[in-house]
Length: 251
Ligand SMILES: NC(=O)C1=CN([C@@H]2O[C@H](COP(=O)(O)OP(=O)(O)OC[C@H]3O[C@@H](n4cnc5c(N)ncnc54)[C@H](OP(=O)(O)O)[C@@H]3O)[C@@H](O)[C@H]2O)C=CC1
Ligand SMILES: O=C(O)[C@@H]1CCC=N1
Image (cartoon, rainbow, N blue to C red; front, side, top):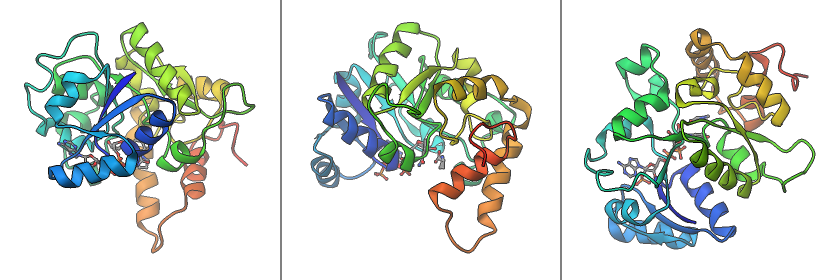
């Protein structure tokens, strides 16, 4: 497929490399000047494009930027993009990092808000695994205990297509329902950054509680901010798992 990735940070870069390796044609954009963007694209082994070229030429557009950057995208960016083009949102909202966004602080489902900002439907995916899991946790289809990733949205065919890309990256995809249900894999839920297999993730998605998610999200951040050293990947996964006593992967 022809895949446009907006944002070449931790997540955009990992997705670009992995899907390139699976034979997809990847075009990327970020906020850098053209020469720097070209260099980034060369390093990733993909093609650089302006954001306008990218949205014009991709079958799937993966938006992988901080939440706070989403309202800064041009309101006309997707105006002439066909409805057949799938837009995927990888974002997670962290108030301490992404500024105060009243609607999100008041509980609006994050990807519903993103969809409203862009003025078109989105599929939510690639948000409930840490960069380290995405980079190194992938396994071949059918491998025992393959890590699963949640995918939500309102169009079944789009979810199937994105699930195929998730599998290409080495993960099982679990359909988490409609976009309005996608809070079930936001930060602070049992499905978030807990590295579960398919059955476990299905149960974790069911067990989520919307009203407590923001409190758990902030508890994790505050716990790590009190430390003088950065947490390891294992420590982040362990703390997220420990928030939910029923997590089957708790020690
Ligand atoms: N890190 C993680 O473990 C995970 C992160 N996420 C979510 O995915 C998203 C991306 O995360 P991550 O990769 O870590 O973020 P980074 O900060 O590493 O990268 C953000 C990227 O977005 C680009 N960018 C910002 N604004 C724009 C814009 N207006 N137009 C084009 N590009 C833009 C930046 O460009 P430039 O390079 O020029 O600065 C950069 O390449 C976030 O919403 C995050 O919450 C989801 C799962 C896990
Ligand atoms: O979305 C994010 O940026 C965060 C970082 C740790 C997990 N997800």
